[in-house]
Length: 132
Image (cartoon, rainbow, N blue to C red; front, side):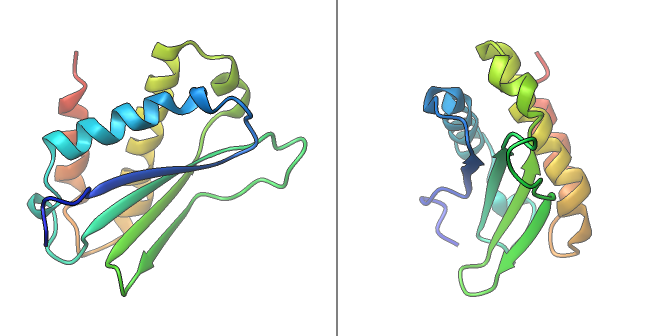
């Protein structure tokens, strides 16, 4: 595995027009890539892409949380819904907290289904990064 590439990626599925609402995503991605090494948790997966889902369910069909494994790229995609109304009205600090909580939810409810990754250690290390 090439540790010079980003091992933790993020994207979003949203109908929120204000792309600045996702500044916390970039911050979170950079922290994880700087502080965590995916090799500490698995040698079978080369990248985890976290998909934040933030859509108004009154206008769109609700997307269920999901996990996908892309065999060729050895990439896992974790999709977790954000609380839409809370997220669109949140200040930067609350936004970041919602993003972190969604990531933990993704690890503990979706990634825990996989046998090829130490999701408990990843979750604990992630939480430890943000204990303050």
